[in-house]
Length: 311
Image (cartoon, rainbow, N blue to C red; front, side, top):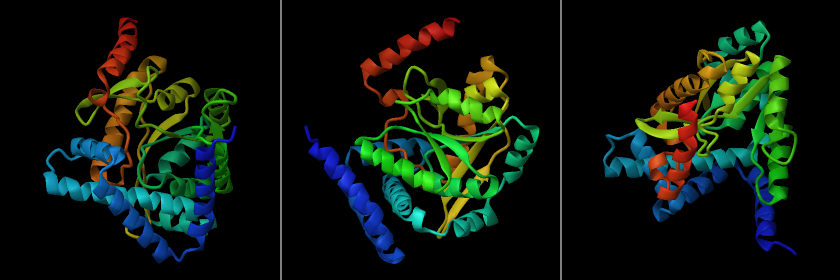
């Protein structure tokens, strides 16, 4: 049976990649910004959740300031999508050079690779991590990351092809070989792994305090570092007026498997500081904090956490 919703979504993404690339940059920027402003005014579920999230990041903001911050954040999110459609046709060397001219902390990656155990770069949902990936490929060559399977499958395949065209190695989160096994293999070969690290509201997530409230973050970055000896390096990303900001932080210490929880909290603290510095570039339109979840989901997470505390 034909799923027409999936067909429409796939066609829309395909046209996006073709048409947006053909638009003059100024025209595309104006259109995407107008769409962002419209979405902010309509205050759909995602925008409302974004506002709730940003209110925790900037608790001193009054209603008018928060309105402006949400509008700027939606413009930032729209800019990410505009660049996602345009990046494969952009000059990768020019993107690399622009980021390289201002980024900081590259010495931490070089030092870790010199030790021979690989690097885990932990990223938040900020700025344009694809552009940061272009810099990483230009500086160190191919790296590996994991992507959630989107629906329909054809859209997922387009995103994989897009990122592979930039020089990334993409592993499916499901439906293939266990990504943790492959990532560990890459790290043991002194490779580079990039993982999003600021949200995991599943029983597998590690409980942390983030902007003063409880949430969960992925165990993967610290777990891989503990298992392989790889360096765990937090990364901050943001947009500048005409380009991209990138900061690589010093390594987070991971004291073996027993130290995963402590390391994940330390990672959360670093990510929070970067997000607080550039709140409009944090594209978190989903529920993140435990207190925002339904009572049933909170109870389910709490029941899974109790056995962990007893260990």
